[in-house]
Amino acid sequence: MYQRILVTTDGSKLSQKAVSTAISLAGLCGAELVALKVVPRYPQSYFDGGIALAGDDIKQVEKAWSDAAQKVVDAVKKTAESKKVATKAIVVRSDVVSDAVLATIKKHSCDLVIMASHGRKGIKRLLLGSETQHVLTHATIPVLVLK
Image (tube, rainbow, N blue to C red; front, side, top):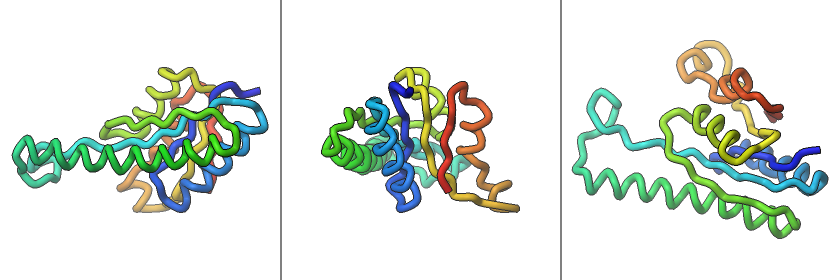
């Protein structure tokens, strides 16, 4: 059925539901799991909403974010492999989560994406956007969204 399943996680309780579902489904299908966490780049200018920091300080902040993200996907990998599911733990740096998800789908030849949705409505959805909606609209493979 599925050969490679991509699951996105941000380490939250809600995304844990997607991770658990992805591990179970991958186990049933004998599929490989790709666990993805997207880390933003540090804002480089005042107009990006960041505080002006020296280049070395920015690198330290980005490294800390990447290290924390790696711990999240490594935990997914450990859990999945304890259930005999082969897993790749991937951290990608991008300012647009949905673009990173779509690029990862192509790069790793995934045939299913599992992700959580926060279910924002009204003005919050308008202001914050919906990464999940963007993936649903632009993905060429099935997307399973868990609320």
